[in-house]
Amino acid sequence: MDSENSACGNPNPNPTLGPSKLMLAFRFLRALSLVHRTTPASSRTCRGRRIERAAYASMAYSAGTGRGWSRAVLRRLHHRARRRAVAPRRLSTTAGNRAEALRQLVPGGAGMDYCTLLEETADYIKCLSMQVELMQGIVDSSSSYGP
Amino acid sequence: MSYPHAFTPRGLALRRFKPKVLSTSYIALPPSLPHHFEAGRKMSSRRSRISEEEISELVSKLQSLLPEARRRGSGRASAAKLLKETCNYIRKLNREVDDLSNRLSALMATMDSDSAEADIIRSLLRS
Image (cartoon, rainbow over all chains, first blue to last red; front, top):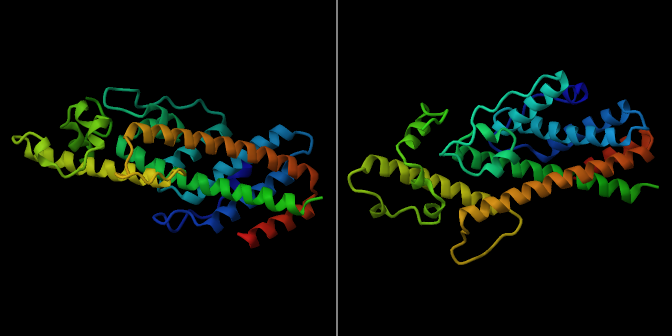
């Protein structure tokens, strides 16, 4: 979806500290207003899916390209936009791989070794919980001020 | 063994193991017990100790991120249980994103563009 692409700015300048909450909020709200402007009011479920994609996209852009999971999320989004076939997995479940359920949950987890998977999971959980807090804050503030 | 990262430094270290050395029972052990490893394989035991320390450090970092902070005596549950809890937590977060985006979509249906931007500015000021 080009709406998520146009909502991106520069990559995160502080990759080690993780995305700042303000940057995350700024990106997400910009994407949200774009979705609001460009989606017709009738297609409610379509708008819900676009909001969810905007959430993951803004999260991945804020995290920057220094993380494997954010690269995988952006790859998946761009592939969907261009309607290409999904690339086959490079690493099937061989003898040395563990934590298959976790690999399926973390984006890009299929091609990582165990240590990298644990690091990426920690970062992913941090960013995902920040994103959920942000969205919860928006819903709370708009429902307290709404009609 | 056919790890794709076989030629990175970490991959070369990992290739010296048999898979069962990295089993979950080892992760729960304290990392500084050299006599658990064979005396003749000192190089690989040093490397395995380093990456097992890494693994246990990463696992405890994950444990601190999970919402149920368990203050047990050892402070460290088994790795398999932690992984399961991590999977459940990620699934829960995905469900929450899904639910919140539906609610946001419903909210946006009721607003027009002016109040949407005012609301955006309000929540930015609050955070």
